[in-house]
Length: 252
Image (cartoon, rainbow, N blue to C red; front, side, top):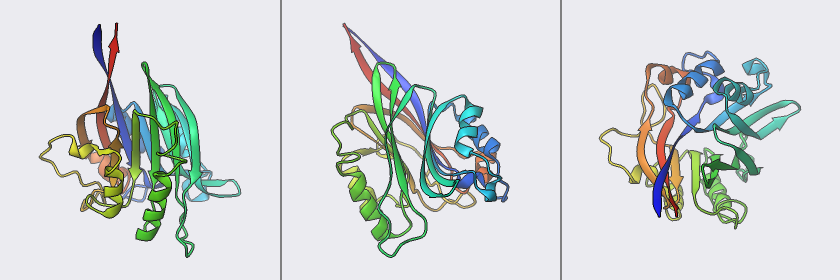
């Protein structure tokens, strides 16, 4: 009997509709930031599709093409042909499992949120990856967290380990929302030692870690890094988070 490790890199990145801190819109710059990390799976939030404000570009499709990756996109907001939402890109084969809007603020908070769940085939493993973007209002985040922990998402029978939940949670470590996820999954930052602070927002002066990756216990966390480069500092108002992961395989 022999054993081996299947290693891969996952990146979560709120791209702010590909508008940088210099106010320039550039999916090409976002793709360059991602390419430099060598990520195999990429979870993106705040993508525009066919919107006048960003030149009627399908940002998810363009970035995936530039990186030569497969992808699935889900709009959290849509009006006629305009869409705004989240995507998962992968060098590995992937299959869409579920995508839906998340519950909004009871007073009708203007920016809708959603989540997208894909199954990624990595070697002999099928990894369940859920990418999300939670709301700005605390009550809204709790309602959305209840949904994500429920029977349509993490509580679904098909959502078996290995599982990865990632995205922009608009919640800092130690918050009630963050702790609710840590009760069922591991925060990757708890799994490694680092001397660098993992703050992700805003890029000009990072004061908070609101972009997170949570994994099931069977996933080994090898490295966690907030990707701070000259390019990532201006490409979006969030820094991306890169995680090196590994899955254990045993063969007879």
